[in-house]
Length: 138
Image (cartoon, rainbow, N blue to C red):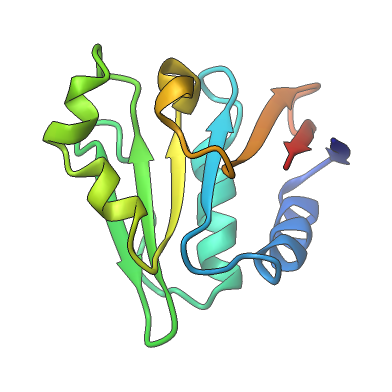
């Protein structure tokens, strides 16, 4: 387990720049944290670090959004509105994470038993108005 304190958006972007270099096709990154903790901001910073130029939005209503460039495909899931594990099958979750993309899953803790065993778990905790604690479990 690794803990990092982020004090502002610039520090988040710097952290995500470094973290993005460790990502490989097939990685599933499970993001947990309270509403407004910064899960979508984290994915936005990762996309920026990966030179994905599309505007990254919260997938709360779409459940899944996909971003890409010539080098990488990134799936961005928000499972907040899902109720049952069977719904993961309905949205094509398993097919999406089994390809050569990188997948970020917000609210993954709702379906912890359905996440891959080798998923990377990142918890974002609010510690102040602009500061966050990021906890990474590999």
